[in-house]
Image 1 (cartoon, rainbow over the protein chains, first blue to last red):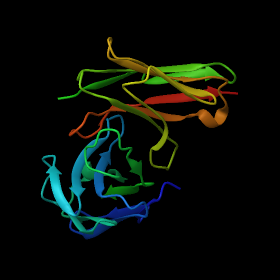
Image 2 (cartoon, rainbow over the protein chains, first blue to last red; image 1 turned 90 degrees about the vertical axis):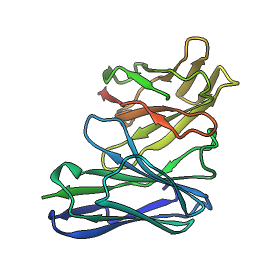
Image 3 (spheres, chains in turn yellow, green; image 1 turned 45 degrees about the vertical axis):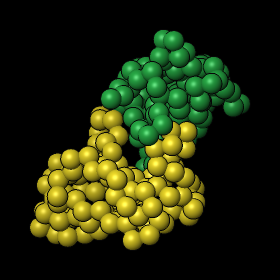
Length: 115
Length: 111
């Protein structure tokens, strides 16, 4: 256990559905991240939050909408997704943002399948 | 920006042999290099890391070496065991920058 939990672990949704992914960290960290992991590709950083403020959006389509209500929780709201959005979505946290030597701790991920 | 390459993409070794995975980075300002292990159905887990003021770090069967001049760092696993089979990712970061990950190496330890 890394102290970062994600729910659900698996999600199947149609292209017209709306769903949300949840991440919770129990480490007292101030920075949280969403990554997308597709087969045979490097981890893609999607969003970065520091102290509940979004500080980075790496050209992610608007059908992905993040929310960080407090420093322990991070959500990823999904709507009208495409089949190519099927992937493993990973949440991570670190003590500080971009402090270079602060390790990122990952959750187990949500395996998303879009039909 | 930073670019991290990782080789090989797949590696098979016999149980008990050593495995070496190498990463190169492009940004000379990078000063932190973690290695993650990702088992099937799980998220990446940190296994060892090294900072740029250190040339080598060891933790039991795992070691990491850093060559700042050549801008490469390597993961060494000795006496491999079947439970070492996983995908391994390297990453590089510098102050003010997010982690940049390598594409991963799938290690298979054959009994």
